[in-house]
Amino acid sequence: MPHIFGESYEFNEVRAFLGGDPKPPNFVIHRNGEVIGLCLGLGWNPRAESEPCEVWVGRKGDQPKWGIKLSETKGLLPVYVRRTEGGKWFYNGEFQVTSDSTDPAIIRPRLQPPTIVAIAQLVFLKRINPPAAPTPPAEVVA
Image (cartoon, rainbow, N blue to C red; front, side, top):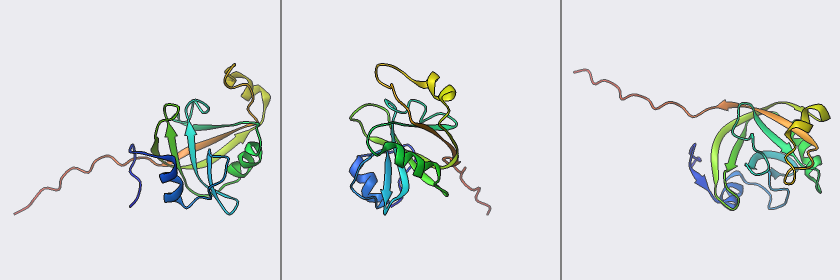
């Protein structure tokens, strides 16, 4: 059953639904080395629900490597956003990568010490499939 815009899910449900490998980093849901979805906590990605959606890729461990893979990803990516630490993940629609930046002049204003002190890359996404407006009921013609 497809995930529903605005509904919340546990992280393991999201990863299983998308068929992702159970390996970090958890901001990218990935399978066989390919990015297949995103789980963005607002604590680390405060502009995840903005237009454009921004992914703030950290510098720890494999995060920079996966940021590069994300920036090179073609096609639609389902995006889930966690609004509170430890909370559920809300399905936010399908997005497409539009651009990225490693320019310190663009990154620096986004740093938010003491929490966010290092960003390796910004990846910008555009919503492709926004939630459809409810369809009005069809008129019955007798």
